[in-house]
Each structure stands twice: as C-alpha cells, then as structure tokens.
Length: 256
Image (cartoon, rainbow, N blue to C red; front, side):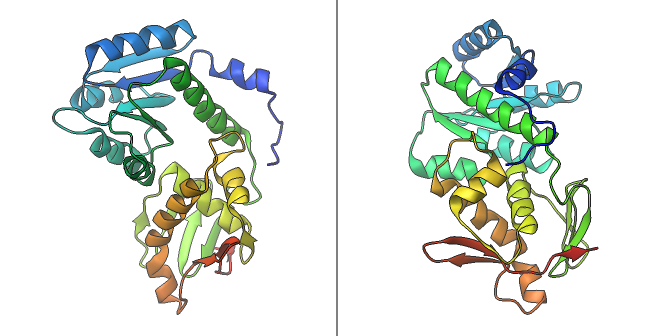
C-alpha cells in the first residue's frame, strides 16, 4: 500500500503513546487488571461497567479505541457494538467468554475490528490494540486515489472525504469503518478481479490479522447493503464472486 509521507514503525509506535482506551466490562477485577496493565504501557484508560456508564463518558470524551465485553447484564456488548458502529464510534475489540468461531464471526459482522476469547493474555490484547491503532494511524496519513472526491456508481453516490454513502433514493446508508474501507478498495479498482490478499491489504492494512473468512464476512455485509442499487440499474450484483479467485466490483465508477 502506498503511503504519502510514510510513517516508520518507530514513528507509529510513538504516535500511539498516550492513546486513549475505553474499557467496558462488568467485572471489576478485569477492569482493574486491564487498566493497570495498559496504563503501564503508556495508554490513558477509562474503565466503566456497562453501556449506560459508557454513554455518559462518551458525552464528554472521545477515545482512540474501545475494548468491549460481550456478556454483560442489561445491554449486552453486541448491542453496544452496533450502536457504536452506527454512530461512528471508536474501533472496537471484543472480549468474550464465548469463543466459538460463530460468535467471532458475528462480532466481526457487526463491525468489530478484532475479537478475543476470555480469559485472554493481557500481552496479546496489548498486541491487538497496537495493531488496530497502527492500522488507523496509517489510514489517517494515506491519500488514496479517490481522495475527497464525490463519485457515482449504479445509482449510488459516495462522498469519499465525508465518508457519506447515499442510495439511489437519496437515503444515507451507514457504513462501518471496515465496510467503508472495503468499498473504497472496490471503487478504486472497479471491474477488476481482486483476490482476498489484495482486499486485506487495501481495506484493512498489511499488518492486520489476515484470514480469508474476515474478508468474506465484510464482503457479505457490504453486498447486502448494495443490493438495491444493483437491482435499480438492472445488474445482477455489484460485488461478484469470482470462483477460486476473489471478488469483482462490476459497476462503472464516475465523478458525481
């Protein structure tokens, strides 16, 4: 991936010093353990017990990343994740005592950046946090070919700078960070077969955890949101699966 004014690994690490982390977990011992450990590694940590307390904190403060427990009394972590993703909240790493593949996939489908089973090694969580932060720092200094342009495809319009997607009926469609990055990758390479490795690199960053299923999940979510546009233009689908190769964005992309 080409970066304008590329940041070295040392610069990226330095940029993470003092990053703010929101921990949401109903277990007081876990909150204390994670807070102490992450603060020892240079992060500013705010820890709360539930979604209501989280909302109060978010009213007056922004965070670089959130660590969110799934199983909590009252509003569960997946519901909280859905709200954060819908309103442009910070990237989220999920923690759950339920560590099956299905639960992990559900968390990723709903917009989580990563998912760890509990109990987890704090050092592994630290590594995952740094990976997500590096990814977002790099994306912040990228200047993609589409830049801040407004583009049209299959009746849809997207403002790349504002990250605003409008459907053929002029209704705004909310995208998670992951969905926007994936759509940007397709828009920048229309009518080309893109394999999973390329999509992982362009939509998530070369240092993210890479496994094919993550891209398949993201494509499935994005495809569902774009279905109406394809039908309005008489197209079978905007994102076509190319067997044994990857995916192709089938629409023509032009300036709005």
